[in-house]
Length: 605
Image (cartoon, rainbow, N blue to C red; front, top):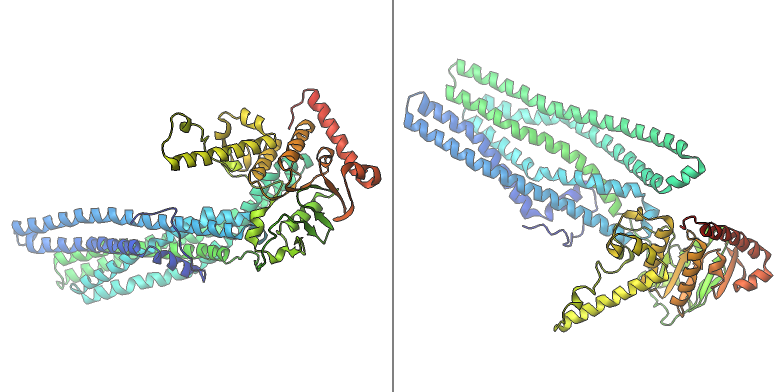
């Protein structure tokens, strides 16, 4: 049964941790059944070896029958060979079981994160998602050991008990009752481990989120002189996590110590009892050998049973965290009305901003957060009374809004991969092999034309964002691998890559916050000119205070305390609004200083 990493994972059972683990088993029950059967036969045959050895001693060695001795010895060799093959197949099957559970959990978590969309960050921290993806998935997959060796251990335990009955009822009772007593002894430790493990995972997710925040804001912290303060706080939190890890390790070490020590004491007790029975003549020498062999063989099942309990205790904790994540729901989408068929105005009553279709509109404010909130309302990322045409955005299905309105956040995530993929186009230039020979396949021609169109669309977006120099500077151009969040690019380069990605979507309505704030004056002027030409006839809203962008806008809304204080062109507002003039003059002075620095040879951003 092959594992398809891209197949539909199915609908997970979100009613609890145990039910989720059971769902993972049901989704691959043939493989789990095969693992249980292989493990059961493997462990039962481990117990068969002492039985064959006892027969060899009693029927061959003791009476001096070399033929019987050779026959029973050959049987032991054959059983050993078969068991070696069964052990290999058991391990291979259980590896597939764990891999399937791993891939399946990853797929359902990623699919649900995608379904949550913008609601994800509002409901769960980044550290929680990372902890689930890195730690909990591995723990869950490891807990499925119970369906193979765990079931086999129970079968072997019952088999050994039955074989012991043929030797001595007293010894059989000791064996059959001893293992449950071991489980009772370890039960409280398993419960304590679940509590400690839960607390540890929670602390780990918080610290993981803080690591991500520190990595993203390290430069700002250095600039503000707060690196030492934050480092001290992180050191304290990591110390608490370490102490919690020690507590988890202490419980785990006790479980492992008892798991190794108690079976040894159990083995010593049964061996002592068997030796006394042999000395009294109540069992034969061969039966004494078999008793010792049975108890030694029982060590594997007992160890697997203890390991199974340990893994299940940790696995159910991890499964509960996954289930809690899967229970999160995106914002309700109750829209039933169709979006306007023709380009229509967007209106935000809370601020008074009205965006006319086909215009380049700018929002200028001294508080960028106010403009960002307006863009979120117009893009329906936050509840509001905003309208599209005469239809409330809340009444329109979210899918229609997302397909036509794009909100380009200034710190939008950038995924790792070739630059062409980061921007959102093809993995390679389609003009390569297709130009070497003439194709006679119409489907291939159509595919090549589609690829060429996509490539042209990509290069146009890069040109509009003035990002050609980025492509030229990279060793393999558009095929150069980009790190997650484009950490191998500068701040200005990342901003242009984000803008190129937004332009590549060719959205009907583009809402962009501070798309050029990290660029030097010359590059910003180039972007402003190209953006106005590229988006001509389509609705574009820019939240910015740069005079270079504002001068290209058809309409500028000057915002004060999140509301429209004045509306007009950039030059009209300069003449009539002192507050707007002061806001823009401040940015103009900054741009002039940046331009002078560029002329003096300082590197542009």
